[in-house]
Length: 164
Length: 99
Image 1: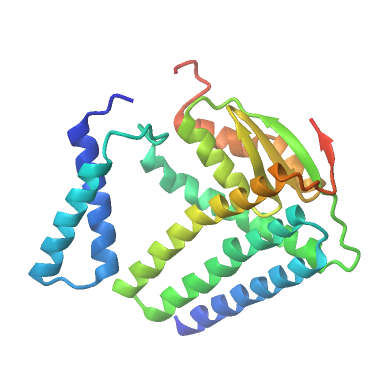
Image 2: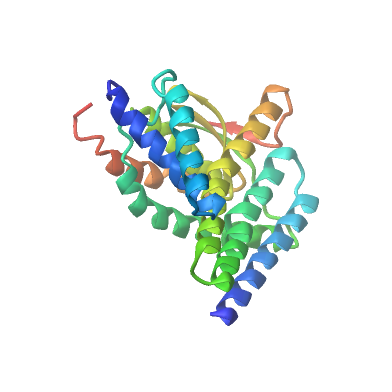
């Protein structure tokens, strides 16, 4: 939580500036300098006030988590496609209450986001570490309650080994 | 490269059509939102990756990838906001509650 102001400020500036560089697509002096000044200003105004859930978020490990999630998304997308195209429409919608063991705020945000991103399950309500999830059928719901996704995220944050 | 790009765009379009069919066939807000999330996850994903391959390496590919990253961040937020609003407004899902 106490990550220092200058460090956060520089990180924010770099993030904003790289988005500027990608989206503007012009690299003459006036555009680049203007972009840099604006990113500095916006970062200056926005650093250190809000309580972000993304402090010490393991951004590097996100690179490993991304492809895994993509695979899960493809898998469940095919499942939902089959459900929709089946003439009998064999859906069994269900509201599940799922208690997560994750402690890091960012981890819970990532879990809720991943659940919603995966077709077939959607996060309805989050309270503390308790998630209310709507699942379209049994298989989708069981996939969630098996806790595979949570374990993956816990591994990413290196939780469950007693520290934090 | 172009062949792969066109194939990906066609696959994406297929999933977009399936999502539209799902919107019509599924019974209530909650189940329909599952069909919508199909749109963004595979439909838009395949179309955008196909477009970026079609463009070739360069600034446009980067731009499309930024759009993709934003889509993957924002789509769950919007879906969640819609569903939570429906839930809080008292729309009852056609579902039994379960622990």
